[in-house]
Length: 126
Image 1 (cartoon, rainbow, N blue to C red):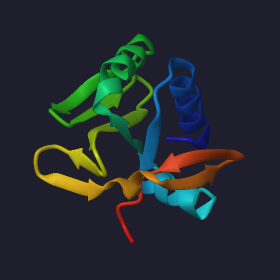
Image 2: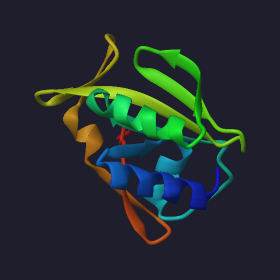
Image 3: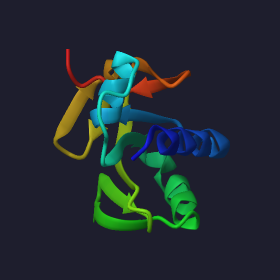
């Protein structure tokens, strides 16, 4: 997935009012402020409340769900671009991802830079 593809996805989420946090390789690169390698997919965390809206817009743009679980959906389009969407809910000062994963709300406090754009980043590490 190219930087251009990631930025286009972020433009889409801005346009439809869905806030997302980058994770995985792109999240790590954003924290470093530069792309360090090629990434096969884009890992994002999205509020479970926004999942249906984002899913609808991805489908309209040619993405199909390839793998689905209650807290995780992987999308791929005909160009091979892949978006790995993980859902969360905020519960007070905690973030939950499925029934067994709970993190402090501060995991959503991270920021990074891709290109010249400031992005939100999930900070599951230190």
